[in-house]
Image (cartoon, rainbow, N blue to C red; front, side):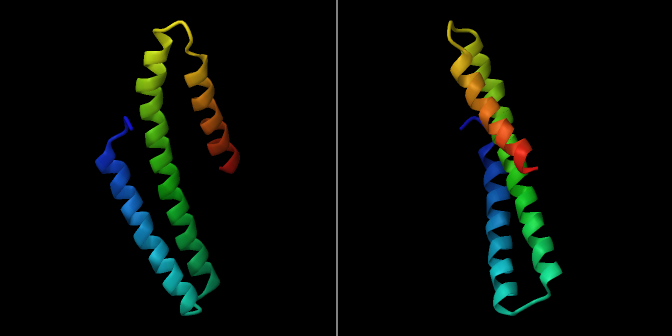
Length: 89
């Protein structure tokens, strides 16, 4: 992985903690809006981590592939992930 491992790992650890908190909120039958808000916050952090990984992929793997005769595979991989990210909003 070419992305900053520390940054991505930190975001994932935060999400893991948020998910544990969400599960506790569900177990405690907390207010639906509060649970949904925490779910959205977790989703946002995951999206930011995915963006960081994708950006690093483009800046390294795709850039390196552009120097070869067949860059299309790496470009298509990146576009596929990007399309999924955009579609999921």
